[in-house]
Length: 339
Image (cartoon, rainbow, N blue to C red):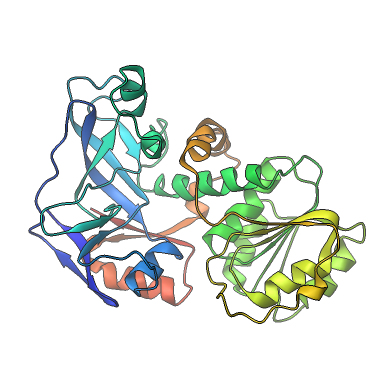
């Protein structure tokens, strides 16, 4: 089968000879229809910036697959279903950093394993059904939306709170849109890509602006004189983090989601208020991600979160280099590779 393989830092290729994965009684085999390129984790893996990398590996963790074979003890899925996060186990000769950019993947029936005391792994609880009526390739964005929604719950977002999101990548736009869906008061997004800023406005941000034209802190103070309850750095940038320190009210929360912050970054910690919460939400927690499935799918099926606003490009996997170019060039929002 086909699959995107990272052979060394910066060296990625499409192989066509990967072995098909095998399934056990509690698993289904999926033919993947698409997989989103994660602007954060995938790009860091390609660039060799994760400490736990083992080469060669099959890339991708935002896959949607259609069930083509069902293990005899599976009860939650049936042939023809579309499932989020179909993944690869390690294959002979290849490691897997979740393996979503492969033609076929595997999904566990977590509920059946749990009921049968058959070694259920909570990490597989995120293998969940795509509701009818949602385009299966666009459904790859559900994975990001669920990660973000669970992060907002972990940051204890409350109805009526004022929220500022710094960063206009797929995660930043999703943060602003979901905060509004979840009942936030004023929601502001700060970025510097006009098309993405426009998308954030269409998706519900009360104010979205270009930080190259309007200073972040001054603009937010003028719009939210009452203060900021939740500030989220969706990039991982020391200057954005320090802007959050300048803006957050007493006992407010600063959330650090972006992965870009280096350990040696120069940060003026004297800007931090004496009473506030600084919380990292940089990695999804499977149990919490799966818990928001119905909530997020409800926002999508009701029309409040149109996935077409996020998934701006659908590109055949054979043209993966063009997809990576778009991500690196900050073109579009979410790029999905299709099989």
